Each structure stands twice: as structure tokens, then as C-alpha cells.
Amino acid sequence: TKLSHNPIRTSSPYPMPRATTLHQMTAKEDEDQDDEIERLRSMAAKLRADAAGLEAEKAQQMADAAEKAFQQFDTNQDGKISVAELKAGLEKVLKTELSDARVNALMKEFDASGDGVLQLDEFVGVDRFRNKLEALSREEKRLASEAKKIAVEEEQEAALAIAKLEILNEQEPSNSEKVLSVLPYLFPLMDGLQYGRFLLGAEGAESNPFVVALAVLYALYRTIPFSGFIAFFVLNFLGGNPGINRLIRFNMQQAIFVDIALFFPGLLSGLFGLILGGAGVQFPAIVTQISTDAIFVSLLAVLGYCTVSSLFGIAPNKIPLISNAVEDRMPTIDMFDFDAEGRVVPKRRDEVEDKEDKKDE
Image 1 (cartoon, one colour):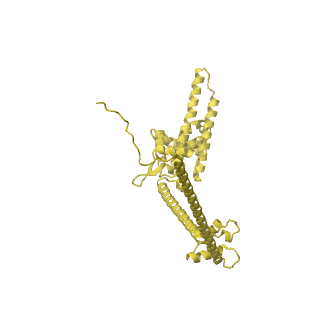
Image 2 (image 1 turned 45 degrees about the horizontal axis):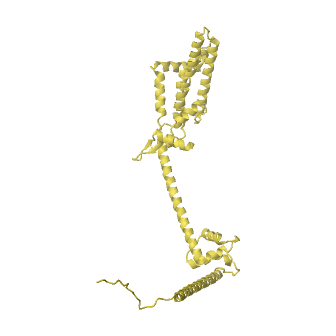
Image 3 (image 1 turned 60 degrees about the vertical axis):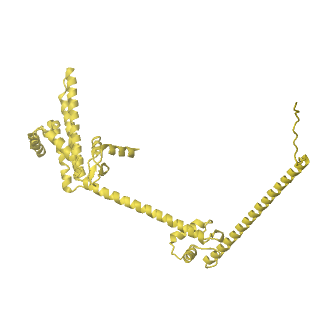
């Protein structure tokens, strides 16, 4: 038996919409959407209009309140508010006393015309004045706090400076300290007498009391073994003691440098002697005498300047090269600091050099 194959036909109980009907439905939906958009636009416009009306009403209320307050402040009814009227009106409304400085600051802030008074259009209302006064108060408190902080820091620095000065004697020298400050220069004088052999050994010099006194001092100086080395180390050690008056310490250091400077003429004289001797040339005696006399006279001039200046209590710091080198070796307050136990101690050398480098920059 053969089975016949027939296609199955399906049918819908609902008829398919026609193209015209779909078009009409789409058009209606678009029209509804347009109506909704227009309605929303109308509502937005109404809200903006209502908001503008409220703003205008609020602005008018504020203007009316400002005008009313202006009339209350303008006690003489001249159409403007002076500094005195502003002060009296604010004190009455805020129930507090205001300083003239704050009222003047308010006037300066809101007086747009700069005529020293407030017109009606410049009057901003009590609330704005109150806010500005609060801002001024906060600023004054901030400035007062900063000033107090700076005062405390300056007081601490002054206390530290006083504590350091008690360690580092930078005070004006007393009369006895002025005299003591001259004694270190005996060291270069004794070592420099070798250059005065021609002047001091001249005929009739033995009757000169100055020459006799030098001879006695030189004899005592030479009776001490290694007197030059001992004098050098003693002056160098005491010159680093910050408790000794600065003038004495300065002269101790400068006496050492002057004594060192005396070494170079002898060195140069010896070198010239060797050079000329190797060339078979005799060094003239008159040249030797004149040069040694010049060195000795120069030494006396330097020591005389140092003596006179020291007796007047003034540091003799005008000697070229030497005085500058001495000043660099003198300790200053910046070279000291406080340790954990509050004691004044010298700073490390690298810290001092770093601070000096920053100052130079």
C-alpha cells in the first residue's frame, strides 16, 4: 500500500493586518510621542517661569529688607551710612561691641565707590556684614596665633643664644682682659728678635732701656727648653677655649700666625743663599742687613698695631691675609648646639660646613 504525501496546511484564526493599518498605528504612536514631548516642554517652561518668579520675589524681599535695614542704620536720614552709623547699627543688631578696625575693614570691603560711606546699592544687609565679621574674626585669630607662635620661637632662640653665650665668651673685654690680650704677642716678638740683631746690636743700644728689657725677656725665654714649641701649643690650646674672652683668643691665634709668617723670610734667605753660593756669587752683606732690618721693623709695626688696638678693646683684625685666616678659625655661636640632655656642645664639622654652604647659596 502506498502512502500519499500531502503537505499540511496551517491556518490562523486571526486575519493578518494590512499595510495600511500598520501605517496608521505607527503614525498614531508618533503623534502621541510628539504630544508627550510638547507637554514636558510646557511643564519645564512653567517650572522655569515659577523658579524665576520665586527668585524675583526673593530678590525683592531681600531688597526691601536691605532698604529697611539701611533706613534703620541711616540715623540722620541723609541717604548714606557713615562709619560711625555702621558701627552703631551693627552693635545694636548683633548685640556686641565692635572695634573701629573691624568696622573700617567692613567699610573698605563694601564701599565700592570708595567715598567712605555706604550708599543704598552698596548696603548688603546684616547677614553679609555678620559673615564678613566672622571671617575677619577668624583671620585675626589666625594672625594672632601665628604671631604668638613666632614670639615663642623667638623667645626660645633668645634663650638658646643666651645659653650659648654663657659658653662662648663674646662679651666686651674688661681692662684686665685687654692687658692680657697683649701678652700672646711676646711669642712672635721673641722669635723675631733674630731679625733685629743689626738694629739691637748697634753702638749705644745697650743703654736703651727698651733693648735691655728685650734682652732680659729673651734670656728668660731661652732658658726654657723647647720654649718655642711650648708657647705654640699653649697658645693653640688656650685659643680654642670658648670660655676665654674673644679678644684674648683672637690674639692668641693671631700671634701663632704672625710667628709662622716669620718662618718664610728665613726660608727665602736660605734658598737665595744656596742658589747664589752654587753660582759662586757672594750674597752682599748690606743686602742681608737691610732685609733683616726691614723684617724686624715690619714685625714691630704689626705688633705695635696689635698692642694699641687690643688695649682699646678692638680686635686687631686688619692684618692682610693673617687676620682673615684667624677669623675663619674663631668659633661662633652657630658652631654650638644642644644635646639630648640640654647641654651646649660643639657641632660636628660637617654640619657647620653644610650651614655655611647654605648661607653662601
